[in-house]
Length: 196
Image (spheres, one colour):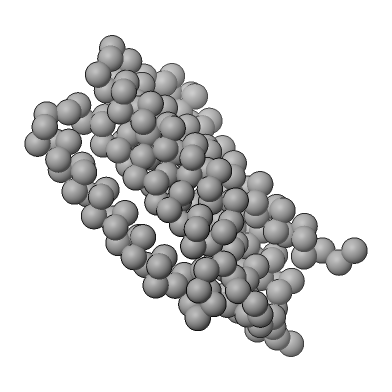
C-alpha cells in the first residue's frame, strides 16, 4: 500500500486550499461580534467551523485517493519546490512585513482600531493575487480579489459612521469568501479524483 505524499500536485493544491480555509474560519471567529446580534455571530462561527471541517475531510479523502502518487509535472510555479517554493516564501515574508508594519503605521497615524481588520484583509488579498503568477491557480486569484475589495471597503468605512461594521465587512465577509472558495475548490479537486 502506498503512502500519503504532500508532493503530489493535487495534495499541494489542497494544502493551499486548507490553509485558506483555516484563515477564513479564524477571520469569522474573531470578527463575528458587535454590532451583530449575538445569535447571528454564533451561527456564523458555527457555519465557519463546519466549512473548515468539510475542507479537512475532503483533504483527507483526497489524500487517501492519491496515496502513493508521485509529484509528476509542475504543481504550479517552480517544480523544484512545487507550490511552496522560494517565490512563495518571499511573498509570505513580504506579506508578514506589510501586515504587521502596516498595522503599526495605522496606529501611529491615529486610525481607528477597526482599520487593522481592513488592513489585514487587504494584505491577505494582495498576497493571494501575488501568488497567482506563481501558482497559476484560479482558486487563489478569485478569493484574493474579493479580499482586496473587502479590505479597501473597510478602510474607507473607517472614516465613516459605519466604522463599527468594519470587522463584519472586512473580517467576517472576508472569512466567508475564503471558506466558500476553499469548499468549492476542495470539492472540485476531490471530484476530479473519482474514477469515471
